[in-house]
Length: 631
Image (cartoon, rainbow, N blue to C red; front, side, top):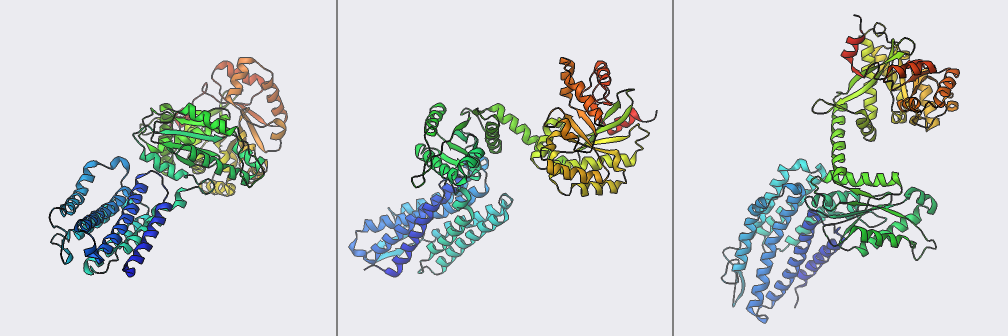
């Protein structure tokens, strides 16, 4: 007869572990594989426990060797479970590059000894003995607890030493499930007749699953493909190898959502993901939003050109759900990562993939290839991003001043305050590199305010009139206009340094003029606070003379490319624009003046002010004072 008080709880646990096994997201990374091993060994242990216990209830009905095999396997599985729980903790806090065979062999030496003791039971009693009266524990039985407590103890030690590598809530979860295992082993040691160890393992596994393996963290709901977060983890796992990575970008994705509506496109995304997973079982499928899929795998069985052609052929057909009477037609472009690429930085490769997708969106009609050069550029951008962040946070952004002179007599009348940031070697990083990075990372607001504050501090501590300065221009990023309290923040800086706001001319580019309603409100709020406005880089953007009359600009600065083009072609557009601006009441500045002839030519056109390397490159504040101060 079956002992149902024993069998029913174990079958319940078995079903629970099987559910976790199939719920677990099967992304091939160390942490997930380690969790999968724990689930597998738990299922195996429960099956062995049920079979071995059932056999012992009818001891004489089964041959001795039958009892021997299943009991040895049970103990071997018990030791393996302890080692697998430790391994899960190990991969939680140990990045792949730090995982060494030496460390693992040292740790697993206890496991190897225990397994050898269990296998020795085939030849001589070690853990248990079987005789005519039945099953009995033997002298080395307690090695079961030595192994268990050793691996829980080492797991806790590893977690505590590496606690900074886990977020606080995840660290607490890891400590909790290890404490539960410790409690389970302790109760089993103190009350060996109560076989409830599997219950404690189940509690530990529930915590592990909810904290580290919940599929919602990894699976994108619309497509049931893996998320971007999972892609980052898998790329880290594949460092040092040459994986197959193919990206797929739906052409004009946002336009397609408007044409077909969001729900229909979401249906299509699900069908696309299903097609990719079914067609390429050797690859993991990721959806990273905005109509972008990534197929990745540690395999050489696929060829880029063949797979791209296959996918293109499928996209020539409509995507249609059986229950919905609408066909969705989509087009795609591709991103591929060179398979000979030797990647040693997961973040760089991930950023390369995302940048390549952005380039596809901008180019619209081209596929992208990620090469060594791509990753080198990504690394440079990452390094600059780190430098910019540090400079802004520590207020180490330097202010340089470039003179603006009168077109008539070339005397100093104003200056433009320019931000400069140095790399770790003291070299100036080009503003064309760090300004876009500052804008993309959200640092541009703080950088802009720091430049205004440095300008006000300079004006407060120096008599700018004695330097020949009537005003100083300060650049204002289009992104700064998104801050609704911009006028208030600028006014507070002016008041702090007791500077006349009319001596601050805020330069904005044509790019800021796209959102007319927002710009108008911000400009007039700041204008009412006493600041003056200058339109910078005219000719490189979107504005026209009629539109400019709606804004309170005091000066228009022609972009240097417009000035240079005039001297190359002598077209009549620039002279006409200068006269139109003068007629409308604006003063005009020509940028990019690099020769005496250019300076004279711009003066003859009617420009009021000139700026460029012919007069001076941007200078550090102390050099500017030395050059233009009283002799």
